Length: 140
Image 1 (cartoon, rainbow, N blue to C red):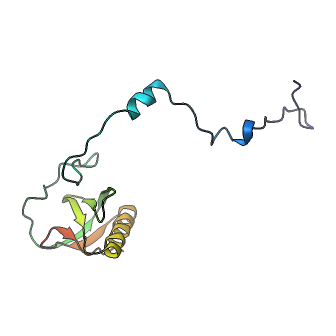
Image 2: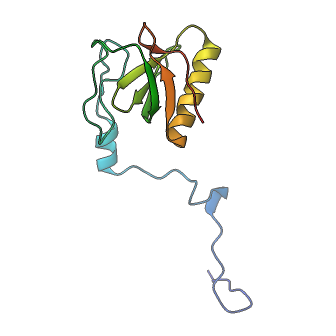
Image 3: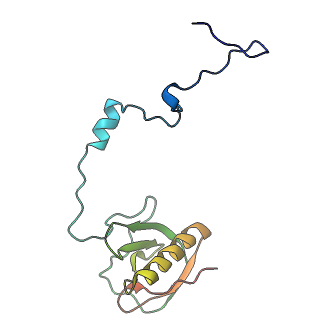
């Protein structure tokens, strides 16, 4: 089979076979990848995050008492959610995991978007609620 060349004499790039680009075509997994993907991960019975984000000191547990006050200029270091309805948490700097309000889907989604924006923007301010959930987020 002859190699085609461009007018400048440089070999032309080969066309991908079967219409698939090599960059987007699935690649076979290596044995190491197969081993790492077959590990079983079991979630604890309570559906909430159990680990702190890397590089953060162990935060105050959710069961400890905290004064009812405003948390100002706190960084959102991580977010966690799963496939349950209204089940999202934000890891707030020096506070720990805080669950977002669960009173309605629209409120929950709005708070999750604000927490995500706060993670990207730098800091958030929110009032501590008696039930331990985040019901409001102020972001600027």
